[in-house]
Image (cartoon, rainbow, N blue to C red; front, side):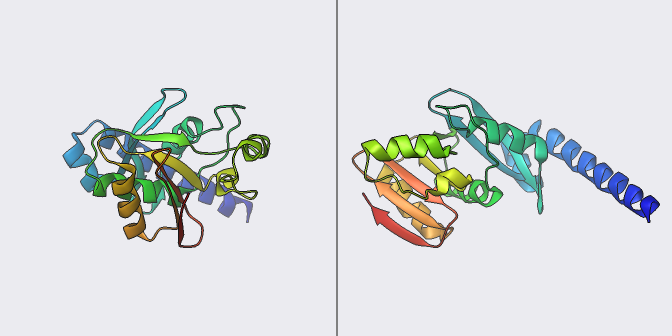
Length: 185
């Protein structure tokens, strides 16, 4: 039984390495060729200036190296706390980016928020939820370069990927992987 588990681990590691290699090679290709091999996204943290541009998923396999970078970029910039970002959120953001025909990185205003940061923000705004999906790594507040918040809101709504909040005064859109619902603040 131990040898079976060992062989299984070796096989999983080998498959992971092969898919990681495919993703790495795909990132070296032109954007048009990349999309036929894997799912791509480009994001930028507005607070740190850090960016990720590349393949994050090959078929049904999420690329661990890509998610380590994505988790770092979408961390709580106030506390530097990291939390795993929900792969479904990245799928929604990638679809949104593609539908908006945006070659520039999506601007992330807020990804993961630690409970302490969320509590602090709640003191200053009634629009911050007590049990925010940000604290679960399942939400992002974004802007799309070259698109108005209203346009991004309409595209996000058409995806039916979860919650969509429209914040016209602050010119951003909230996207999460919770139940499908929408609001305007």
